[in-house]
Every structure is written in C-alpha cells, then in structure tokens.
Amino acid sequence: MNQSLTAEDLYAEMKRMPSSERIRFFALLTSNAFREDDFTHDQVFGTVHWEPFSVPEAAEYLEVSVPTLRRYVQSGKLRPVQVVGRSQLFDAADLRSFKRKKSAA
Image (tube, rainbow, N blue to C red; front, side, top):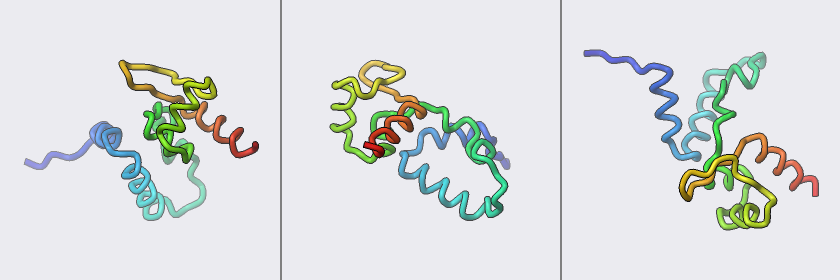
C-alpha cells in the first residue's frame, strides 16, 4: 500500500518540529527548490509566518535567552497574544516590531 503525504500532513509534521529543525528544513528547501528570484514570501511560506511563536521560538527569533524573554514579558515590553495554561504564544508581527525597535536603540 503506497500512501502519499499530503500538504496538510507535511504542515502538521512541520509544526511538531523543533524550531531549529524548521530553520534547517527551510534553508534546504530554498537552496534547492527556489533558485529563481521571482518568488514572493507568501509563495514560499504561505500562512506559516502568521503562526504564533512559542516562548523558545520567540526567544530564538529575538536572539535572547528564555529568561530574558520572560523578563521582557514581566516588564510589559512584550505581551503574549495567547496564554494557554502556563504556555504563552507571541504574534510574529509583534516580535518583528520589537526586534526592529531593539536593534534601532
């Protein structure tokens, strides 16, 4: 029985990957599959860039430690968009804006 992987299956698997493995996957994908310069960000990443970031992913994106990210939250510099139990999720656009402000300072 030959069962093929659907786009939905692949997406679900990617969501379960650690962020470091996702980065490696996209680096492989872009270096091997997208050699032309006419692809837009949306064509390559679709809605993945709208997915919320977990605390470890947000810390990695901001290039800070998890404790530093938590201090940003405690001081009100960053706010999670969703809290599920003890887990906090951060909006990609908020993180991008925060990172720009931080690098400009």
